[in-house]
Image (cartoon, rainbow, N blue to C red; front, side):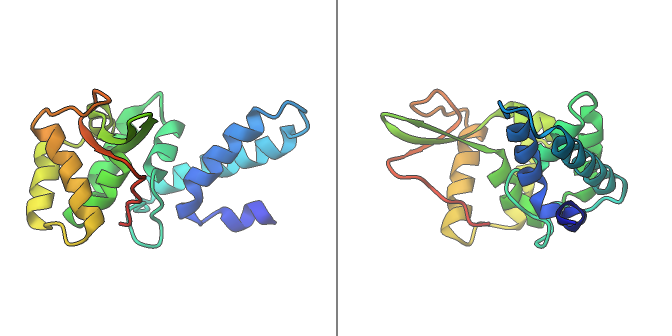
Length: 177
């Protein structure tokens, strides 16, 4: 019943993917049937998302990093992800996409926020596409300004103290997009 309720809750894809990961690492070995049920749910959801072009960046479906949960299902055929992303991407989603692209690192010097260029390649999106989208939809909020600042580091090949294309902060940054 609970699993059935998740079937069209596309904003929960990352949660389900993470849950499968943790269930697979269960040392007690008692979660085999549950793992099978969640694996089927996850696989079915991914097939529906791609097949029906369910837009993970739409307000009701968006949850940060859902696109990576989807890509894990197609890790042996990344062209599926690139085509899906190409089909659903609109410039108005640029800050959600940037929030997905940004990785966080933590160290003795604070927090680092950066974009790995490989993630651009994963989605099949170019720096020029992102730049054009930002030009069309300039940042309006503090989160959007921070995301643009991080993206500008990629454009200008500027690395932070963690040797990544990004920015540093003494406190964690929450991207509200």
